[in-house]
Length: 247
Image (tube, rainbow, N blue to C red; front, side, top):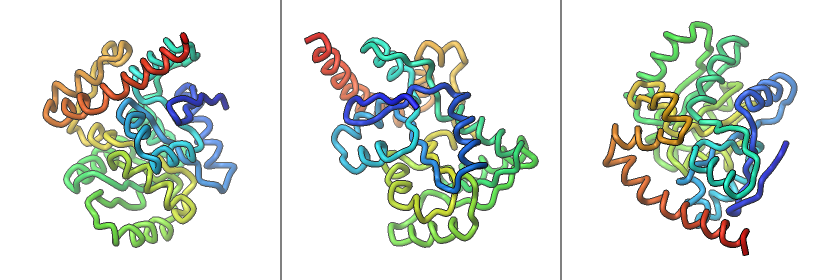
């Protein structure tokens, strides 16, 4: 699989179809857990100053590009990026795959209200999906081992984490060998999308990189503050790379 090394992390320029096929093949043919991580400007900016997060990303089996700004930046820098592979799209496609093939799933993360609403919506859409268990993301550090123990006993094919960065990446890095699953993916805000809390932008806005602005319009206090905090540091990393490349 093609791999880019940039900003201290690895990135795999892969199509969504190739990614889903790789995950499906790993579940059916390999006993090893496949760790997928999606990166966006926030993740990259945090990883530039967070060694543990950086390690979690680089220890992942596949790193998909979750954001159009990252896609465009890499293309300007001369890398061939086939498409954006957005985490909410990957999550939905994997739910479809699990429903079709009978793969079992476990959901960890979000507030209990969001988790319940998401689980209800998913059960309504995917009637054959085997949801082995759920756990909200509000737990104490000392409860983490118990959560891992529960997941290990259930042995789900897929574990999805709707936790913030770097909590979700570090959780998988720390516990991947103990989860007893075949696939783990930190989907972040995709739980909010499936729960109906966040409405995704129209496809035309997604394609030209304006989905972030659409999300900010829905929740300016949360997403707007995060964009200001992390998009500017990401822009600095991009221009530094661009300057060094020309130099």
